[in-house]
Image (cartoon, rainbow, N blue to C red):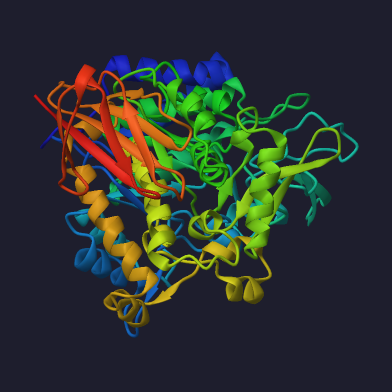
Amino acid sequence: MPMKPTLAPAIVARLRAHLDRLYGPAEAAEAADRLVALCERFLPGRQAPARPLFDETDVVVITYADQLHEAGRPPLQTLRSFFADHLAGTVTGVHLLPFYPWTSDDGFAVVDYLQVDPAVGSWDDVRALAADVRLMVDAVVNHVSSQNSWFTRWRSGDDHEGWFIEVDPATDLSAVTRPRPQPVLTPYESAGGLRHVWTTFSPDQIDLNYANPDVLLTVTEVLLTYVANGAQILRLDAVAYLWKRLGSSCIHLPETHEVIRLWRSVLDAVAPGTLLITETNVPHAENVSYFGDGGDEAHLVYQFPLAPLVLSAFHLADTTTLQEWAAGLSTPSDTTAFFNFLGSHDGVGVRPAEGLLTPAEIAQLCDLATAHGGGVSYKADADGGMSPYELNTVYFDALTEVDSAEPAPVQVDRFLSAQSILLALAGVPGIYVQALLGSRNWHEGVKQTGRLRTINRRKFDRALLEAELADETSLRALVFGQFRQRIRVRTAEPAFHPTGAQRVVPTPPGVFALERSAPDGSSTVLCLHSVTGRLQTCTVAQAGGVYTDLVTGRGYRSGAGGALRVELPPYAVRWLRRHA
């Protein structure tokens, strides 16, 4: 009879140390025994993949499970079929937004973590998709739906006492960081009377109490279940708010980082090669803290400042701020990388631009979003005021001038120039499905739901979508075809490896330029991106050599003194591979 797999003593000691730091030795002892037993139940987990953690072929599309519909078929099967028909060999990863039963926030108020919403499919469908692509799933671990059985049983007095955070409403909570304008506490009737519970995001999203080891162990089991069903990347949603301590800001607390370190240790032991990505919509310096020391927390961190900085660069026709910011980017190890993206299901976050863009520049972005019929979501400030939190808009409209008479090809060139910056930067690109499909603001959806966030969350009838993509003159077809081609250029070029060297090349304000190099030095690409609607001649000093543009196939040669002169039409992109 085969021996039951067990964790190595060194791993057991590491897990115990995490728990000691969270709960103290007395409480940690019993929790450690349970955690070890839990991990061993999932052993042997998925073996370490033969491929590296990430490379230049990694491109992730962010999508809902029910993004596409067709009669007589679960949406997850339709999604898988669409990706196989249109994106096989182009996109290697899919971030599947919450596909569990839910009550609000389009999936981010989870009723049952361990079920697939029957309206979208089954675990078999999830596993089938994971067999085709590198699957990222959402771990919505900060809070649960008010209809989650953990909370309903807590309200009834049956069990789960201590799983949620109850606070006297007279308590001074002014120091708490608020991502939403609503009060932090929500009153709920329970078997024990009226009780006020912590709700960081909405009254329907009840925060879990990680100061209770039972909560940590239960959620750890959820994460391992996702991995057992094919997840290779776990997205820790809103993780910055995980741990609460009265009198503190309740964001980025040391205990939150310790929980992430524990999960990293668990995954490294049970399912090596599984990546952790932290979703922390906060200013840059706070955001990068989730890399830890480069080997003990997140592998990937969302690059939140990128979207507002690129958007501002195009509207100002000035990349100065973008250049200065990008020149200072770095990660702590070659096993960490940024997850670069320009907008998502949540729109365009502007809080990460604080300290990078001026208040006037941020206000300009807010005005641009509303001018297109979009909107702005706000957060509550400690002084009682309100400040912008995110722009509710698709990125295409945010880039386009209002009431513009520009031909569609010009608008597409501008959009592709912005997306090419995303693809060229060091890191793993994340592309929201609405961007890939060239979507415009969905005003009808906002009318239907009454929620601003719906503006960039349109779902599609597959047959109608396919008809648009088949029409070569349609905006969708123009964007989709060119975007796919640009992705293929990126994924075939070793210089675009997520951890390859990156140097910002000084250029006039109308151009954003990077030099990217493969980790082994085998390839170097000079990337030029025009952010203006005028013809420019860009001269790059000390760029001696012969080049081929990976986008157009055109050849270039430096002139006297080693200077390279490149003519850039409006919103042009030139990715110039240097020849030895």
